Amino acid sequence: MRLTSYTDFALRALIFTGAARETVTIATISAAYGISKEHLRKVVNQLAHLGYLITTQGRHGGLTLGKPAEKINLRAVVEAFETSQLAECFDKDTNTCPIDGMCKLKHALRNAQQSFLKELENYHLSDLVKNPQLQVFVRQRTG
Image (tube, rainbow, N blue to C red; front, top):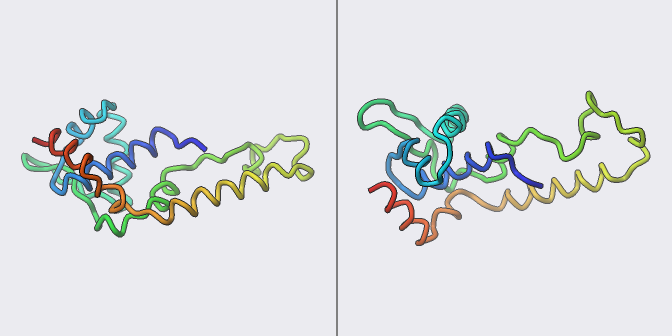
């Protein structure tokens, strides 16, 4: 399974913000990761809508975590951002597979996807931001 860039950017924004432990800007995160500010702005908007980030406008505005890092579960974040199915046969409306109903692939893929999500359930943002090298990376970019 490969995460979309949208989900990847959401996780990166949370990691950077959580590691910074202070208000950061979209421009800072964008520059740190070398990603589009406009794309990141859309990601941040959804993260704020979901309560993962708090956005503040103005001269000293920016982003802060909307809840403690210990309360941000990676499975929940991935499920909020990933909408794609692993295969066409997962979608009843667009499924054109002629062997649907006879094929065991759908079952195997569903089990694999659930195992992937179950593993992510074991991790929280706090597990990711403890890395000392990450702390240095973020401090260098937030000045």
